[in-house]
Length: 422
Image (cartoon, rainbow, N blue to C red):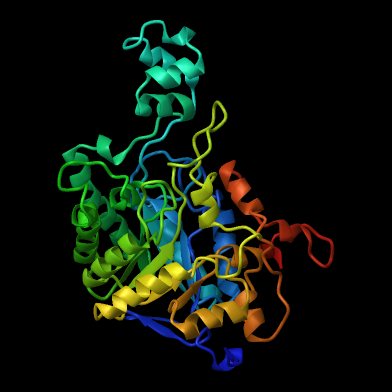
C-alpha cells in the first residue's frame, strides 16, 4: 500500500465524535500511572504527566481509569464524589491549555479482590473442613471446590455471580453520576470501561454464570452494559461524547471471542455510543498465582500478553479485532468510529490501519508513554523514541509503582529525566 505523506494522511485529519471534533486520529488509551495518592486525588505528578502528553500532539487523551465509587482503592484516581470536582476541573483546564487536544476520563467499577493469605483462608475453611490446615496442597486441591481452591491459592476474588440484585441495580446510577462529574469538570466526554478483568467486562463475558437476566445469553450478558449506557446518556445529554472500551477477545478458556465482540459492538452503536475502543485480554482467569501478601494481577497470563504483546509479536498484532467489529457495525448501518490498538508504533502501521478500514482512530499506549512527542515528530518528519515492547511499564504497574518507560533512562544526553522535563 502506497501511503500519503503525513500532511495528507488520515492519521492527521480531524474526526467528529458526536459534537466533538478530534484534531487528529492519534488516540492515547487509558493507562494507569499510580501517580495519584491513597485518597484518589489529582496530584502534581498526575497533572504533569497529562500536560506533557497534551504538548506532544495527540488528538485524544483518555485519562487513566477513575473509580466511580467513593471507596479506598489505593493510588488510583477517583471520580466517585463531588469533592473531586475542583482538582479534576483544574486538570481538564491545564490539559486543554497545553495543546490542541481533547481529553476524557475513563470511568470504571471494580469487583472486590484480596491479597493472597493462605493462613486466613484456611481459618475460614476450618468450619467446613475440620483439620484442613494440616492438609497438603494436593489434598486441598482435591477436596475443596474449584472456587474454594482458587480463593485459597490466589486470594479472594469477587465474581459477578456474587452480586445481589440491589448491587447490580445501583451500577447504572454510579456510572451516570461519575459521567455527570466529568461533564461538570470540563472534560470533552467520557469512556465507559467495559474491558479486561473488571465488573462490566465480567458481565459481558461468556464466563458469566449468572442464571437471571444478567447472564447466559448474549442479550442477558449485555443487559447491564446497555442499562449503564442509557443511564449515562440520560444524565449527560445527547450532545456529550460517550464511548466505551471493551474486549475484542478475552483469550481465556471459555471466554468471549470476536464474534461476541462484534455482536456487542453493534448493540453499543445502536444504543448511541459515540465511539468503540477495542482492547484484548487482561483477564483473571489465566492470571499466575500471586506471591503471599499480593493480589492476583490480571495481566500475568496469556490473556495479559495478548493485551500487551511484546517484541516477539508483529506490529499491529491485534488489528484483526477492530477490523471485524467495525465491519459488523458498518454492516448494521452505523458509522460509529472504532479505535484500534496493539503494538502500533510507526506511521506506516498507523496510517495503513486507517487506510485499510481496520479502524478510524489509532490507539497508542506504550508508544506514547515511550515518546509523548510521537504525533508531533512523525507529522514533522523527525526521529522519535520507539517503544521496545519489553513491558517494563507493565512490570511497574504490577508492583503498583509509578509507571514509567525504560527508554526514559536512555536519552541521548545520558540523563534519566522523564519526558515531563523534556
